[in-house]
Image 1 (cartoon, one colour):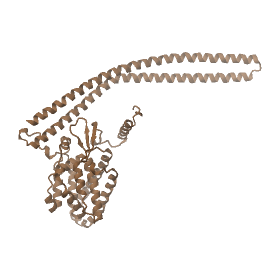
Image 2 (cartoon, rainbow, N blue to C red):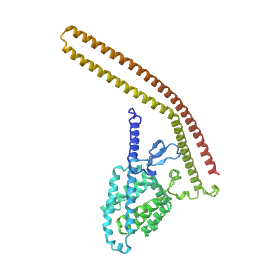
Image 3 (tube, rainbow, N blue to C red):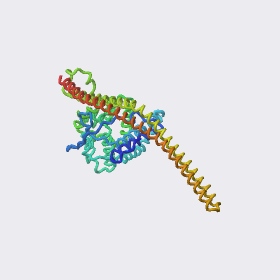
Image 4 (spheres, helix red, strand yellow):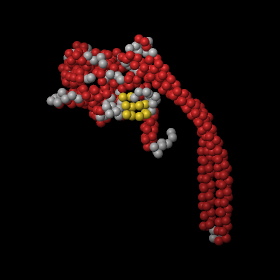
Length: 460
């Protein structure tokens, strides 16, 4: 891996986090799920904070802003809450299925002991998200309406009910704000809510609401999730009047017109593959002359969404092709570079070994001479031995210089070859970049044309 750019702390921090995720993926025993795999992330263009409230996020390649802002730290917490809740409900359901129905009747009094467990789970989830809460005015419009519906002072005299309402408000608002999959589902189905029936028979209306949610799902796993939630509401809320009243009162106070899917929402949920929004039913298959004005408007929005998605996929494909071509260009140069680098490393090791050998011989010669000098009684003998030592040392130095010069000459030749290969690689990369720029420019020209064609089609 290349070194981090210490001159840009922000870039270095992002790159460091990405590398840590790569290491963690390699360490995990269980392979990551397709939903957990890293995806192509669209670049952030700008973020607006309208005076009316909320956050608008603009991303490259999208004509409409996204209502909200992706808060990755909290998205991970949401994922934990969803998996834990789904796992507990699923485990409880499958365990109860194996038990004799008549025996279950004897457990009905235990439902009152089950309520503290539910409240403890809600409290734990609230503790998990409480430090991540955002300001109420920064929620998107549908969630601001839900937050306002929860915020009535109907339970001032009942502390437990007021506390439970606060917990549910924070948990549901934060989950729906930062998990657009559930927010779009909620907005799509809430329009069908019958408030009169909700007041008369809240459990029946809640079941109809969740059944409608379940019917829009395209995957069996999420259908099962809604089914488990239906069972929970049908049986548990029958005994927990406090929670039933909070949910019923909140839904009744909602202004459903403020929760409808806007054009921005429809744009981003048009090509979801996990559920089928109501406004998409047969919209693309129906001849345009048979559509109402509202349907024509929706058709125009989703056509732009599909065009943007197509261009985004084409961009990814082009980048993959360019990366593949670049890898092919680099491959022979990289192999040659590795080979030359290996030879240079071997030369360095050889030079180091030669130096060690010469040092050992010089040390040995010096030790021998020292012993002879000590034994010499005559000054003439001492001078003679000193002369012999100098000659030996000079001979060793000449030998070392000659061999080192030869090794350095070979090393310089290898380095020159590496430099030449690097220059060739640089030229290849510049040519590849020019091709990519041309392709990107062609896509920029193609996108307005496709949007114009979609507009003409809708006007017809």
